[in-house]
Length: 171
Image (cartoon, rainbow, N blue to C red; front, top):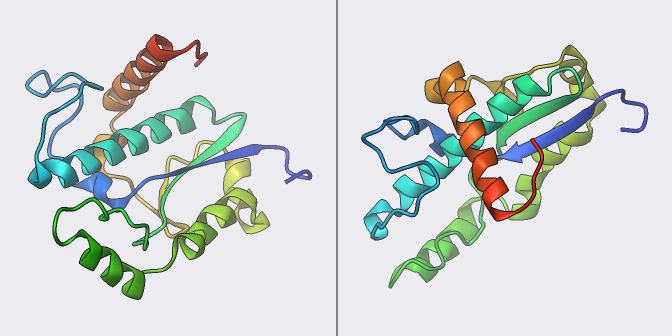
């Protein structure tokens, strides 16, 4: 990385970012960043929303920083992370099955590290921009909402506003 002329940022998202059917700037939806009541049935919907927000933010950050830093947004694939441990009744069984089937969180971190440090990805970094979502370090087009310019700007500005409310953050 020392020999590289550009920095790299890797944001870990999910393919779940493709699931939401609404934009965050849709006035019929709850305000961006607001707490939303949901039961167990809504947990995956909220997870997908959070991943769409992250991927959309990454796409906008990639554009804004294109001359200085390459921003990668990536999904490491399924991970035995224990994400389901809080699921009532069946949580332990889900975690056990995930541990048996999916890569460990350490194995899943390898594509993240590859994007961050592998010289093979320097050609992408030197080109600037990027605007590519990656699935397990392979480029893939992000969901249309994440690529839409006005939606990206909205999510970026709302995120900075939320961060500024919680601490002194410079965009």
